[in-house]
Length: 274
Image 1 (spheres, rainbow, N blue to C red):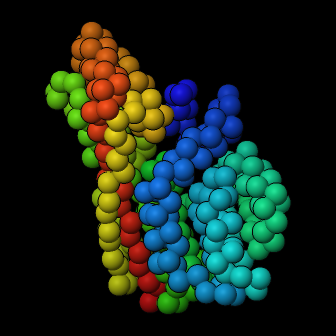
Image 2 (cartoon, one colour):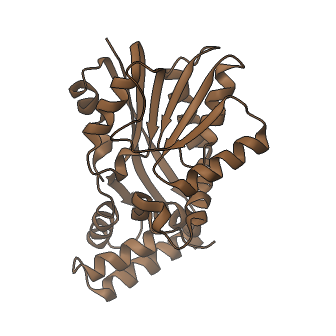
């Protein structure tokens, strides 16, 4: 299995040599059963009744928007907004192929949404704040465009919780730190409750679960980009190049033996606009 694209590159997908590689990575992650169930939980928190108007910020390839549009029925709609024109084009292609009329897409900035106040019944963002310069501004914008009593749902990993049960523990810790710091907001998962409260939302609730990959080193590398993180740890002087290479070899041997475990915590938080 090929390695993933530079995960930090989600900040500006349109500047990448191959935006399609990012779409492929999103499809890989979505294909995990645990991720699919986690998404369904976030959809349910929006209370997507027939006729509702919902917003997905940082919609990527638009598959979640299609799911939300179906839940809203023929009289409802779901709008996906993404900073990447390439992602929006792919989302529109998928919506047309699926024949989902209630799904709409637009390019836009999560930190300055081009929508009036109280324009939608509910809003969600998943793995979006991770890549933003000012996540608090984005959450405030989501709160602004949701009608009173509407909900905002946020789903984000916390890359500083990444753990790998293979190889030297100290080296693994250094590699995990290098992996987290590829992102603008590697710790944002743990901040979701605070961000919602600061945006003035009420009845804030939080849940967490671990995304776990076991056994297959290639699969784990595809999801977490461990090889690139090991290289970064060496380049940044966190560990020697020899230690990074030895650690990665141990990870691959553990995978070949079916003994590898890689895990990271994802947080979900929801709040209601008063």
